[in-house]
Amino acid sequence: CFQTRTGIKFVLSADRGAPSLDALLRMVYELYTDYVLKNPFSEPEQPIHAQLFTHHVTQLFESMHETGTPAKAKHEYFTQIRTGR
Image (cartoon, rainbow, N blue to C red; front, top):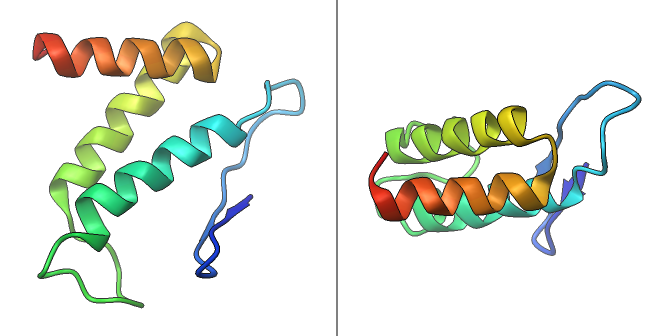
């Protein structure tokens, strides 16, 4: 669980043996601020309907699945963004 200073909680369930996912949750929060909080059409306390947020979170989690660690996932994710994959 990652809780922001404003009280927003991001919760992720994983297997017992999974590496620490704090860094991954922080990256999800960064995407949330970029694609949800800065979106003038997004309303607080409502379900998230930002397609770009969903797309980027999906890419990030796919990178995590492929690489196995949050640090490698972050690198892979940003490599995909730069190359347009």
